[in-house]
Image (cartoon, rainbow, N blue to C red; front, side):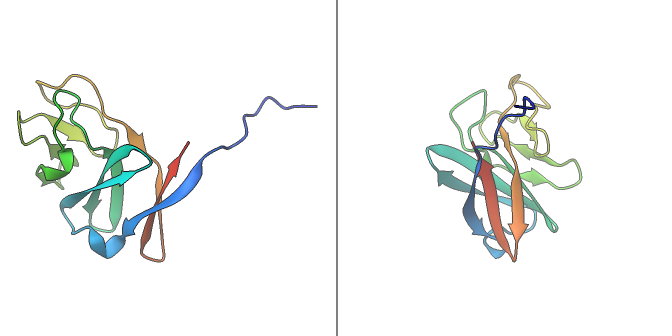
Length: 113
């Protein structure tokens, strides 16, 4: 008898080494057709969609604010939360994707479905 739970169909994929991402910076990683910005703040790493929801611009090229936990789209100045993907300031109004990741022995893995 089924308990109604959906099977876990996610795959864990290696994105980068922890040392590949400088503290207070972001890098772009392309994996399985997805553009992902890896953002490092101290020992924490966050993964969000790398395309600004307002324009086709790489967020990984923007400035990271470690105190506010945001990344700025360099083209129009929109800020996005690196924790939730939410657009914090205009002109962007839509969030970007957020990905679950795990750091194991200094390697950064993402779970993709």
